[in-house]
Image (cartoon, rainbow, N blue to C red; front, side):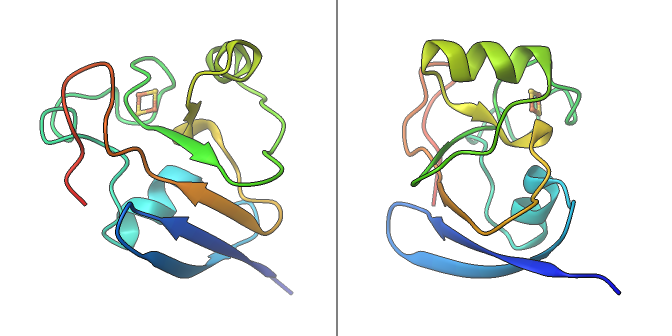
Length: 109
Ligand code: FES
């Protein structure tokens, strides 16, 4: 029997409530609901979820899941946005999409 988790996403204007299957990829779950972590440019220029480009970064509200990917471990260690493509949803989460990113512009909510 599969389980699902609640993911609350703040996009800068409003909060969205998602139900996400246990173990689902956070980036895919966000994109599937039209909640892109990307900017207008990186929406088209990204690594496709391979953990290489760091353009899918999000912040967590409250307790963040432990990183498992080397690049996401570095992000967590140095306080950078976490790589949504490297996060498996294993419990309820609060996520904040970033309106401004250092690389390649702004995100359109
Ligand atoms: S999509 Fe490139 S690091 Fe996540």
